[in-house]
Length: 169
Image (cartoon, rainbow, N blue to C red; front, side):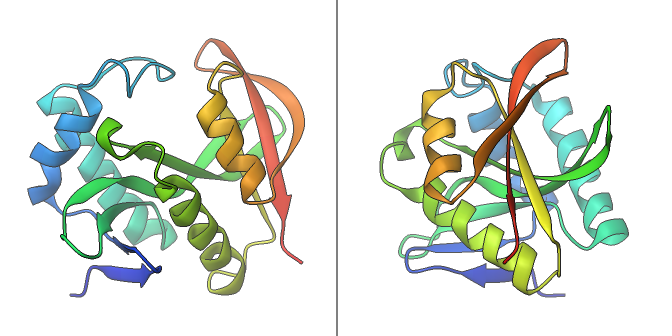
């Protein structure tokens, strides 16, 4: 079974595997990286996240994918598609989360743009959303750079979030 999904100029996006637990835990346990999430994750939470993601691949054909630096092969983050239940129905969210040492290098924008193209061109989706904490300026910039626009404010995970969206052409 191949885990490779697609590549960009500098990145490889692939399916998560159980052996990613230590690298993901490093990201999920960093308080600064997880600042806008409900909480950090411990090892058990990370194992459950990988299991949930593997199930998502089987059921829906997509999920959050591991992002690796093409040159070094190092796991630098995750980016992909997940279903989100909102008041008005279920939407496909484009999400991204990278290790702090890889911030500011354009990796999130590169991976998110590639996921957007994949969602529209390969999966045939017609709309994507991103739920972003209004204080998370870096994530807001990524959403705008890949062509997403502000649609509304929603309450999710007991907090107010900006919902950005884009439609396929």
